[in-house]
Amino acid sequence: MNYQVDENGFYGEFGGAFIPELLHHNCEELSAAFAQYYDTEEFQAEFQSLLRDYVGRPSPLYYAPKLSKKYNTTILLKREDLNHTGAHKVNNTIGQALLAKRMGKTKILAETGAGQHGVATATICALLGLECVVFMGEIDIARQAPNVERMKMLGATVVAATSGSKTLKDATNEAIRYWINHPDTYYLIGSVVGPHPYPALVAKFQSVISEEVKKQLMEKYGKENPDYVIACVGGGSNAAGAFYHFLDDEDVQLIAVEAAGLGVDSGETAATMQKGSEGIIHGSRTMLMQDDDGQIVEPYSISAGLDYPGVGPLHAHLFKTGRGTFLNATDEEALKAAFMLTKEEGIIPALESAHAIAALEKINFKPQDIVVLNVSGRGDKDMETYMKFSEKFS
Ligand SMILES: *Cc1c(COP(=O)(O)O)cnc(C)c1O
Image 1 (tube, rainbow, N blue to C red):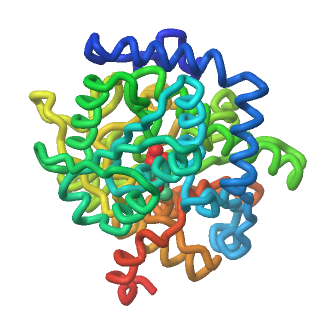
Image 2 (cartoon, helix red, strand yellow; image 1 turned 30 degrees about the vertical axis):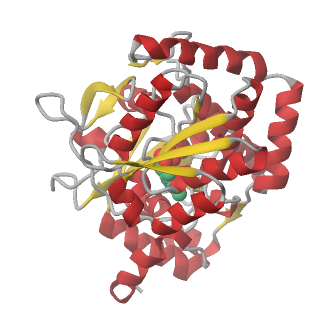
Image 3 (tube, rainbow, N blue to C red; image 1 turned 180 degrees about the horizontal axis):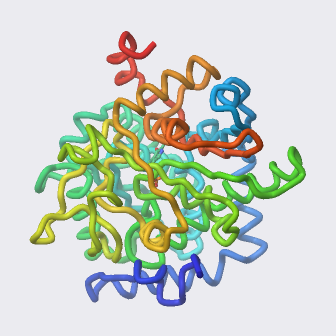
């Protein structure tokens, strides 16, 4: 079984580039640039030095003693929450911005839901002196004021998407429309979604996570492979990065955790694998939540980063082939896990990451297992939500 992307951008039957004719040139130009620059010494030197000195990599692989005792196994936390800007997203925005620079692009276009990807993009644009335009649903702009302020302070222009439900999917539609009309801009996608080559490219930039895990495990435990890797999945980029170098090592169990929202069968969920079916979303053939007419069903999760109706094509392939195990955690389970981690280890995780932590309850580990759990981000942005539930869970 092959889990890497093929030359046409497919993972098994998933992926590809189902896009308007007008955008084919842009995607081909990007594929060509990635092939030309990524493996060069010059590109790698700049990328690696920014990951080290700007982001603060390698992120620690922290042995969590109390968590390990609680679940009677060895639990190691990959601390993406310690990255500059507070999550894994910056690994990808740096990689793509460096590519954009080499392609001669001076303007970066992005869309954002909760604003996390927008902030990571605006950050790197400030650093590299690139113009930055971020599309964001009008409702999300109102809901996520602090991130809007951050983007503006970083010099980005935030454009309100006022069509449809005025949230992420409308921001995406308007960003794509803008891209069609301004093909000189670089469209910076924030997860392993969208048309080829984006899913493959984002996975590659995030693969630094599992590359470091391998080295860190070797140093600490004298072997490169853990028994489990656990990560939450929205679009799937932190999971893709955490899984990447273990995809072909079938002795490593890959556990992806989706957001069940109020419950898989509640109608208020983002558990794409459980409730979804095959179809096309944002230029890619994958699993998505849709009704009988192929209309996208609005997802729901307490965590904005997991509130996406689809999933990247790599994950659809891992699901279909059985290589990946897809679990889910409800809002309530995630909140409980966040308070538990905070109390036990003194780490306040992002609500998204808390879904991965909640999965620890759902797996029967052996005492000799080594479990790597990717803490995709920190919880500062979620304090308002946590405060609402502090009496219930602390
Ligand atoms: C955006 C985000 C996610 C979800 O995105 P993926 O592409 O699935 O990784 C998860 N965790 C955090 C902290 C995020 O900001």
